[in-house]
Image (cartoon, rainbow, N blue to C red; front, side):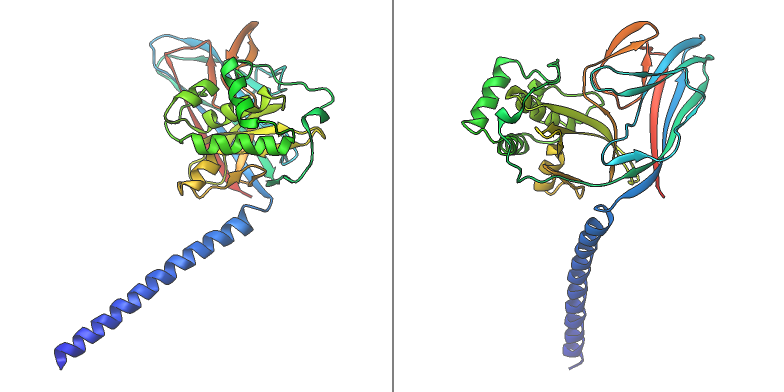
Length: 333
């Protein structure tokens, strides 16, 4: 009797444990849903520090420039104070095609010494929700101004043009065409092998895996190949313990509204590989835009250079003796 009683009690304990485990799992999922609905779909403000750590690893004095992006004010993000640059900037320039603003420090660093530069600001971020039931046709673009094709967005190459036309078919509705392109990219590509630079659209087609940049350059190239103006959006995640780099994109509609898309996050969501949220027509308040476009021509010290993207700080001219590390720290206000 005692043995049976002990076994019965242990069975009851096991059952209660299982019930608790299931309950905890449901509770965690419910909390995640509440967090998503109530936390990321409302405007948020952050205190941000973009800190650039520099080290001169050589035994000689080094003189160079450091280039960094200045976040723009957009329909969903606003800088709410004066940006503080330490030390004082040498100059601020504006890139021509996408109107990116760029901070430039001229630095002299003693041998085997380190220093840091900072760009600090407060920012207000709102989630984006676009309506996907708008009826626009391709011929509703009265004057189409596509961003120039480049090594990352070769939308004028025959292979890209043919692929875009095959996916588009006879469809003339802009939103429906974008949906087709987005679905193709989300299903075809696999996320992996993240790089600090940018994958080209051709690499996205040929590689087994690409990161968010590869998803975005391919989708942007397909859209521009059929006459839909599209721009790459470059920035960082915000509000996380580690705020990694990220890239997504926007399509310009005939009414001048920008329609957002985040194909890499949509792919990761479909494969249960992320809790972040982003898709065609929707992004949340957990990302900061730092710049637009790619293959950017930047004039620095009376010389012209092309940058893949404006995201991480860049030393100019390139100098293997200088190590550069970025810390992006965000604090909810």
